[in-house]
Image 1 (cartoon, one colour):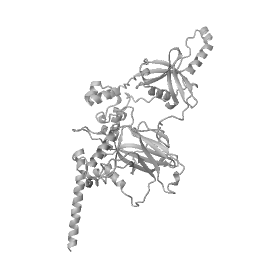
Image 2 (image 1 turned 30 degrees about the vertical axis):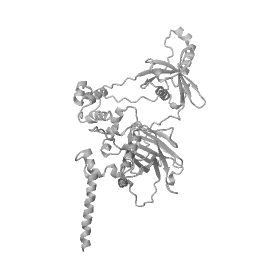
Image 3 (image 1 turned 180 degrees about the vertical axis):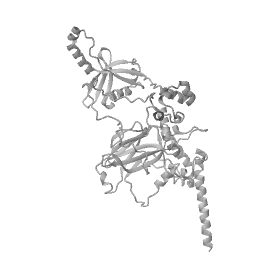
Image 4 (image 1 turned 180 degrees about the horizontal axis):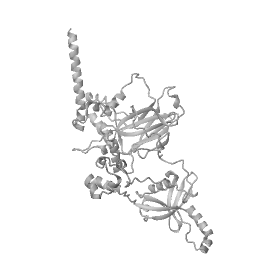
Length: 501
């Protein structure tokens, strides 16, 4: 009878202690996000709790996942035993992720001898930032124009096929790979954790990110949409060499702790194993349309075959301008505001048509939206473009020679007829922002639909016909709207020298 009375009492004590510990562990969340920021269901839905659930051993503890991904970076020693590992990375540094085929014999035979697709993402760990991910990334894009959050270091990677980066997905890259072959992909993360934190008294604390990998196999239509496996890990990104300093600081703190305190923390592992997780929900763009690749190795470089003629335009079509028109309906105006990062003002302009918005003066817009967003909205309404730092024009020498020959053949007839409308030469405009030789190489390669790697060197023809190697300083001294004729010298390995005359 005594035991019957004591057992419930002991259970109550244990249960009470667990509740107190659980509440204490959540106290920091309330302080960080403010009182009433979450209901209990929201707190339990935080990614850290989801991750713990996903990392729990399955019913069959001997279950072997089809793939394993290993990030070659050390985990932090300042992580408690039952918490998820945390890995520090340096901004812009290349880190290897090994893609391992972990299938048992006879498992998933349908992918034997076939390629699979993996999609890499850098996403927010905290749910409060996941809710506003679109706005956060758009803000980052605005502050860092032309930059990407995630890139693949192509030269260092092994076994990846057709790597692609969608320009609208700054935090996503994808590629194909053969599980039967050695595959290692080197990634670079260009954002840092403190870029997404609110400034507080006493400094800033960087937010954690997640590296997530989702792998798919082909369906009957040849599209990579059938999910095979997903895994992720938690990271923080620091300015260059900051991750090394943080790792050293954590290690020194742990060395000062007593042996009893050290037992509560995980050891630091040399590599980080990504743990299984749910597939990323926003996969609607997977293989829907071909995204631009990192290079154009399959393109041909046919400069001498009329690429500069009026009937053949080798450069990609210019982006469609998104100018607001007077005929735009209120519904279309709302969509335009969303597309141009003015979502916070859509309610203010609910019933405004395109004509209504275009009638607003600069002072009107600033009064409604404030100085910063008001000036931005006014410039967007007027369709004002930012002028490039330097504009040059280029033409092909081969095309010019053909035109001159045609002109000479028809010269006599032109003199007899009094026709002054001779053949004209077609030039292509190149707009430069960075004023570097690398940028000029990329623009010329884009103009002729080839890879920049196929252009070995660019020279400028100088006095007495000498060839001067193009440098950044030389480009910075080009005259605005200077005209050049392109001549090419082909090498044996399908690469070219470009000469500007």
